[in-house]
Length: 130
Image (cartoon, rainbow, N blue to C red; front, side, top):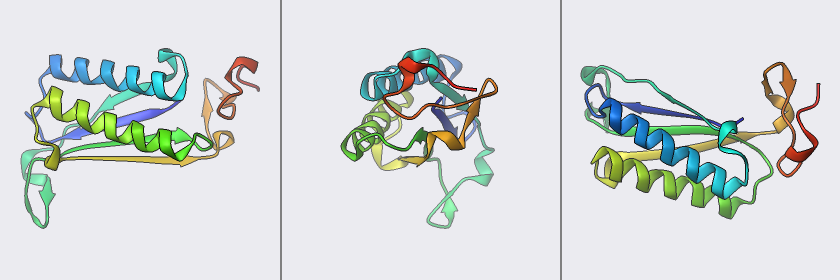
């Protein structure tokens, strides 16, 4: 259900670091939003070093953006962003001032996975409806 895209400048993360970060993002999301880990998708999309800028100058930030179903308490979404930021910094060896995490949300019913409309938060036990 949730999708998280990590966008580093090329060469920032090794394959092993990507695997560790994907595992941590999955664990964090599953723990905070109380969903099975299999619900969490993590994608890495590297950009060439010369196409990443911070403040109008070349930079090497690690951008972590994600989507989640609307309806989770704001305190949990803020915690999710903070924990993702800490994990990204720790695993990538990137200072926290170079990590940006953004979590966007929309109604669950605005998303379809495996051909089925997603349930609202807390209604996962009822299964995905068609």
